[in-house]
Length: 456
Image (cartoon, rainbow, N blue to C red; front, side):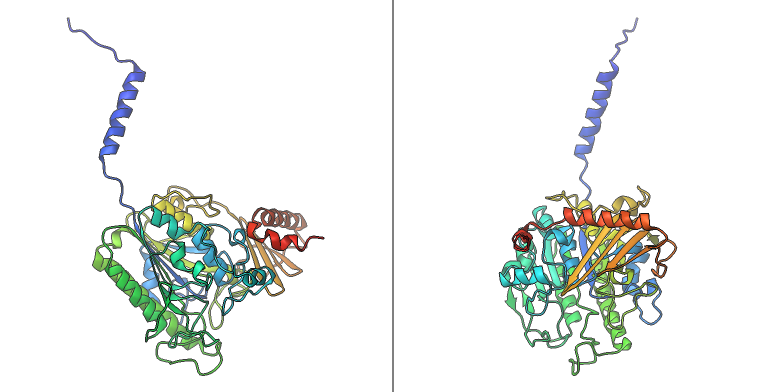
């Protein structure tokens, strides 16, 4: 007679688990993607062909969305440069840093009370102790480069190289003449790894050329390349118009279009380089604007522009591709914000953040593993004596500009023309409370001394 041996269920399950874990351990880990993060400067929500623009051709930028996903409700963390860049690099609301809620002025000038206080102490900039996306990826074995506009502090202690970037080339401030590479003050602001650099050429081309040269030196090691173009920020200069002869803000929509199309051409060059390197299939490519458009831009169909907390000031074009991971040709209405990209990039790179982030990983939605979900997001903007706020809860948006308030339903009123404040007072009370609680929660420790002197 054959003897039958019975294996207890628990032991059998344990054995299967062991075999599965051993098999998993034997398999190579999925390769971590390279990251190409491209940011335009003051590009309007409606300034790309894929967002309905009738007079600007952007086939290369649009191709990112065609081969991946196009966002219809992506937001900047702020309606200006510096604060959005702060949130993007830290993955947190910029208010937590303190003093960076407005674009840093030419020469590292603070433009509102807290920023002026920091500037007087030589502390206006993104502190190096703030955990940055580049530093987190660098610690995980990534090569890192920032090539383009910095705008997070002029002093060397705030430089990109202090924030985890192996390589930096670009301008330290908010803008520069595209040919002389000087600010309105006349100061030359083009730098390479901490040293003043002199180059000839159109700034958009110089940024692209340096980016391409850096890419050509990469090996199989994963890398992060952050390319914050200055285009199409003023001065309005196309590649053939020459240096500014009049006011910094003079120029036509036609010149603006040339600037955007030249940037699109150089984005195409970057994408072509990925193909030549054989890296395209394992590179997460993201293109976005830093805030809403201004000065000859097109934010249609949205209300407002750069500097406002209306949709036109904070809603931005955003396109993303990752072949084989993000399905092609998708459009998503998932509400997203700049600091979400930080969390998303870290998740893609299989890298845990070194501190709690405010942004969320969007990959589950983009890959179809999770349905779009509602968000509660906040904005506060300071410049001189101006104070502007916004709060978004699902489709409900509350806006306050100084003492003027309004309430809107973005699902039915995307252009924010119908003020519901008088008909929905309870909703307004709820939104004010959400905003107040958020402001209390994101108070910046480094501003404690400033606020203590204001106390009676």
